[in-house]
Image (cartoon, rainbow, N blue to C red; front, side):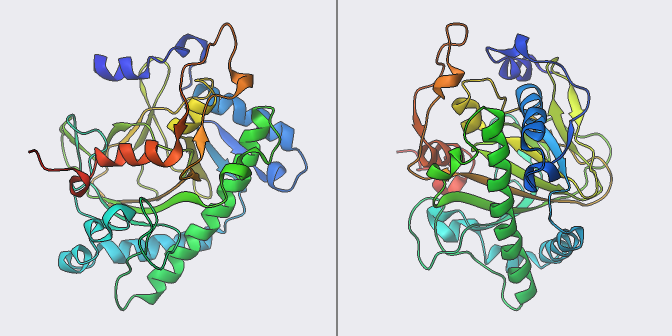
Length: 333
């Protein structure tokens, strides 16, 4: 484990966190049906305070539907490169919709190169409105792809809002707390393909370099290959082993800022040494572009003084993307 990664894990409240050797699994049915919201909220609080990650099961999304989305994901990435590059993300300008080729995005720039290819969509728009908001790009002659992928995006928007109700309750807030800053939230539905890394995986080229997510909440569907790893309190990597029928949930930087470091946006990475193609489908939801995120008064105390100044959701998130996308970076004078 590099000293650099341990330092990046070493947040100011590290010593207050409990260690974990597996990601907790939470049955969220009692949250969704209302039968035991507080019981689920208590489990969420432990998971997000200590791991920043959790699996959720009984979430209401049919596995058959998820399987269908994985099927069209595999078919999309099997298209010829010229067809995929015709949908390149740079053609969407700052909306950041479309295809990203291998090494075209690097989440830990300067340290690793990401051996993955991606396809991103978001809430449909008729024209470019600004960062994260614009028309989606869709492959021609593949209507099932558009129907399934956009349908999945819409289901994830709904599920994320339900899970954020549980997170609000876990912080002793009204369950509707996040709704006021999520009238038109930034959302990104991503499809990912990781080619296999056979033999020794070079530390400079891995699936996704070690990083935290940028926004509020991530919902990840995995295939059965594996490769996700999450850092624990001791700086060791814990496998996020796929569990069929469950999603992996983690929080991003904005929730850590909101909770003044009480909840952890944790370091994670992907290394595909399975010898097989790996596919995953992460969904990211944030807040409205102009929503102001600042530490909650209930999370600030004499023992935990305010650690963050207010930031706007869109400015924070877009700043992180600028570092990862070549077409957003201004050429040197």
